[in-house]
Length: 165
Length: 165
Image (cartoon, rainbow over all chains, first blue to last red; front, side, top):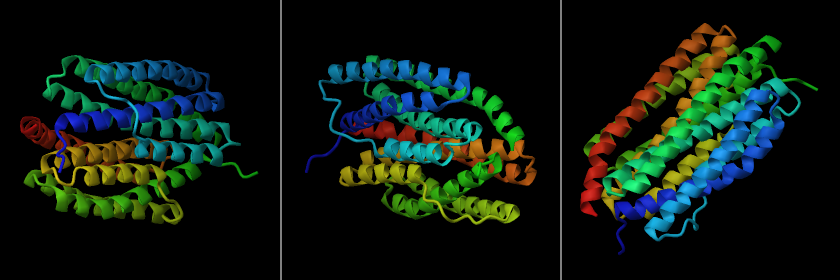
């Protein structure tokens, strides 16, 4: 029986993150289009550009490891985006709540990535894959910053929604 | 057309978290049973007890709001647990990697809850639902502590897996 080493597990996790990022690339333009808050729309648009770079970083790591990025569909991200879609459908006619809901969905996505990149970065460090660890850490820091940015926007958007109630 | 207020959205989010917790209650005993690290098994078992209390807190809030906790299936948690199940199946014969993988899956679950409870707590605060906000904050702090605990256990488990490779 083939035993899976930590490096093989890292590759699995990277494939999972690659699939997650690809799914996010499709979802973000739809979310930006539906955002009422200009700040929120700008945040989604800027995170889209960041996500494109994060995909490139993963591709660099796969090349370095001589592995293919393909072959996995991230079930976790699929569920999170399904949930986000539900929120967008249920609140389609209520722009203020729609913004609140899209932030809630996006923060779940960011937190998924914080957990995922945090683990992958640690495995890469332990395996002595220094360049991969550095690239994963770069993305991790961007995800954390994106989450903080969403919290800042939420402070305004949530208050407006509470006042509109 | 019925417009959804922030309080209605909060109730939706609480239903979502209630469904998520119920799913976690089913998954944790299976994860505890499969853990090789005693510390990890103990952490899953103690988080199971914590989760039971978190469910009770949500029930208290639903009573206060005169709403039912039922009626939603959390698609996000479903995806995350599906992913955890895949990891457990793929690494069933490799106990060290299985522990690493279960920690990775559990940290995604914790991060989901950190994002979810963080948002719900903030909505409750804005709506002046002080007791609900206090209970949600209590759970939020437990989820953050559970995530930190997992990182601490991972420090040992990951090193063992790297050395076994």
